[in-house]
Length: 322
Image (cartoon, rainbow, N blue to C red; front, side, top):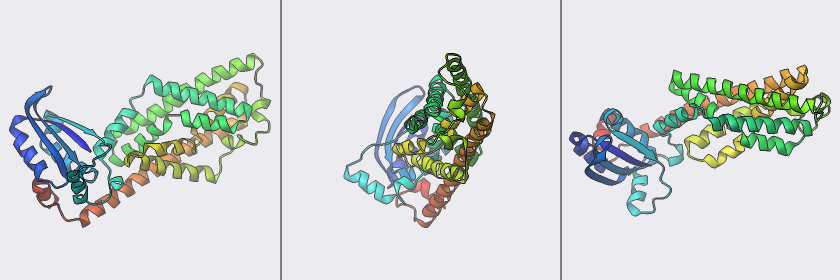
């Protein structure tokens, strides 16, 4: 991970010397007096992912979070010899480490809500409704991929583990508001299609061999939600965003929302209850799995760090580790 730090001049020497002495840190650069907002010195460095959270905790204690600036970015490749030596000096594997500051910052960003979130969720719900009418499994998959709701579910899990009330409430509110808006707009569209004679009650209550599972949740619905939630959180904490596509096409949240909208527009009460249950089961399962996954990751990583000896030259960080 690459760190860009703005440091008050009176703290620059301590910060730079400590980073230089840590074997898990490399490419340390100090530029005096070049930072304007906030004012101070600019310090650049690359840190092994496994050590990033520990280094950031120490920087927080030095006041950089309050009086300076901290920017964390992922490094695509570090082919130099000194970077490889830095990675060897860090305990564990990079994918096992959780950079909590980055996870929390991303989670808070996800629950702010944006027009694009509501737009994508509405479009996904509308596609899912068409999938139900046409009994198209391909459109169901398409709706799942378009849906953006997993980010809010992951943020909810992070908030529960980190005990951040504002993050928990923000995620819950975003999910409620997002699905309410998406379903309401899809209900209007479905009702307009009904008035135009494009659809009727039989399109929802008739035989649907490819999409009937949407409103008929069973034990496997919860199991799949648990597995998808686990995979989704792991992909985010390990920086494997490409795995999220598989998560999106595993859970039946958006398809259930589309079926809810159709059931409301056409008066299919029996399917309304089943679809609502499917939506709730998937959201609950993913949240539980996300919380458990984060707790297990944290426990395993703490155990790895406890078994490792401090790095030679790790001055202040060694003393903090005891």
